[in-house]
Amino acid sequence: CPYIFGNMKVAMRYVNDADGNVQAVQVPVEDWNELVGKLRHYEQLLKLRSTLSTALDQVARMRSGKLRKRTLKDVLREA
Image 1 (cartoon, one colour):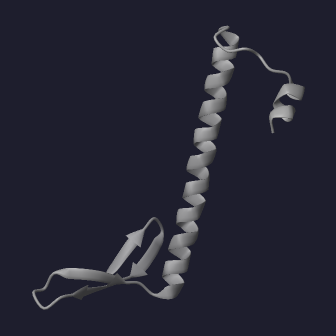
Image 2 (cartoon, rainbow, N blue to C red):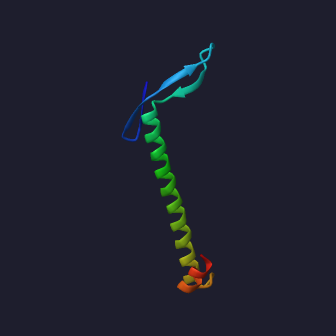
Image 3 (cartoon, helix red, strand yellow):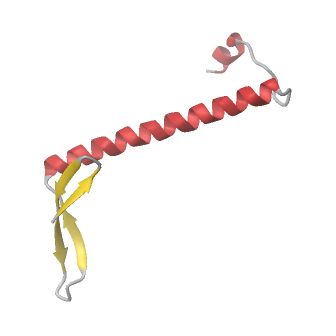
């Protein structure tokens, strides 16, 4: 039973117990590796988006005077 993830078509097989309840899903290793790669890519994008959102929020707070402005030297010392 193929399933489509974005532009990727994955052949999946369901493993059922004696009562017909789905217990597992089998995915070819090549498809699994591609899915894991895509998942890691999306995780990196979400982390970047969160980091950028936090940085933009800090800039807005600095501009409004709610957060102390820092020099590049201050930022590098903290790293």
